Amino acid sequence: MSTAIAAPVIDRRVVDLVHLQRLCNIWRMKGDRIVFTNGCFDILHRGHVEYLQEAAALGDRLVIGVNSDASVRRQGKGPERPLNDEQSRAKVLAALRLVDAVIIFDEDTPLDLIKAITPDVLAKGGDWTEDRIVGADVVKAAGGEARSLKLVEGFSTTSLVERIRRG
Image (cartoon, rainbow, N blue to C red):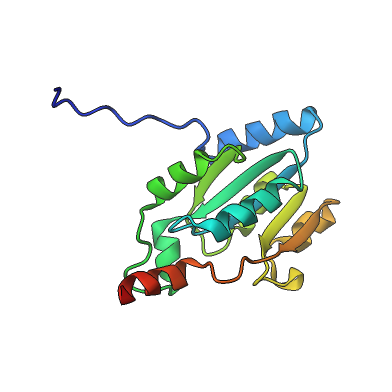
């Protein structure tokens, strides 16, 4: 039995902004419809998966913006959050077959990122009404659409963490 530790596999779908902009340009030249969503995705669960499946179905390419660890902490989700670090959360999302690219952003909102890639569809969970979706005006002005997708009842990271704590 070997005691060597394997080097981490670099996932080509976890990208920086320059790489993401290049990918979006290539996809647009091919006529692909780009869908963007964002979130913490701290503990991936059924609610996330169904939401991402619905978002992916709105286009040809799914791009996910993941809040950095510092950004999650600033959202006031609790002193222990995030439970998983930003690289781990991005890697888990990138492993999903329906995800084409993942980018970590440090700002409080993804507005600058949305402006930089101008997706065709901006999707958020149903707890966000369309008029509250950050960047919806930018996407709509470019001819795209903003969509508020349904939530899966009883599935949220906060409720999952509380159930784990209660045992």
